[in-house]
Image (cartoon, rainbow, N blue to C red; front, side, top):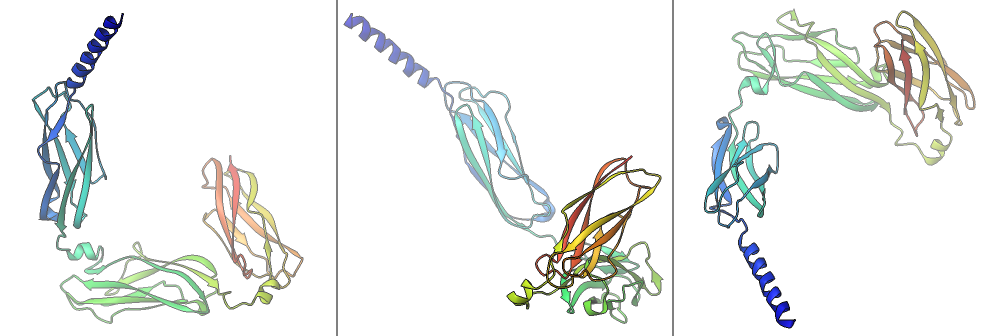
Length: 355
């Protein structure tokens, strides 16, 4: 019985050895490739990693994935027999990616995983005038067309600039029309061909009746020609500065109490409907509603005409014009700006359904 057991054990060991020997194995000639330094104008560059199945069973590449979307792999899809060769091709897209790079490609096979790597350095292409100054106004080119002031605390001022260049063959004079009164604009008197300059936009919050977030436009004129269909956009937020308030002053400040969501019910596309939303001052001094902004042009808001005394309520009137609204449910954000130092901007979602 012992001899039979030993014979079976030796036979099983032989099967294990045979099975272990009949496995695929992937061997790459090299696992790294250095593209060196090359210009961005080359666009896509490729290299090929060659491998051999040095095992004794068919090799199958199950998955090949790159470390980022800028690198695209291609590989041998058919099973590679023992002793035969296959390839993994890596293509790197250098367009819009100047500078040094280092990427990996992970090759998953029925013989395990291998990791390949590529590297190089992309020389940025020479920037054209049109690339650096993409916005064109009859020879005058602007680096950007949007001005962002971000938050400006009343009564402070803030200046933002746009770099410009005269890319034409004649002098240009830059002026503006239809600009908001609380934003002062200055520009070079004359720009000669090839000459650069700056247009300055200065937001003077103390000259403004605007509170909270705003979007304004300014119409640029070049040699008297107004570009009314292509305005400069001005974005900002005017807020009170409560940083100097003491703890006692904050304790005696107004407190705006208002729900975070208001249901407007159903609205017909053929009518306009007015709602009243009640707010309360739970603080100890007068509450002033500075501004109320709603994203939709179909919704207009009327503020309380007087400060809200402590413990008292007031109404915000919201008028919704159904004409032009899409059929179905909607949510519009209403932002209330007040002199409540703990929550100077209060966001309310207006929910309704157009039918």
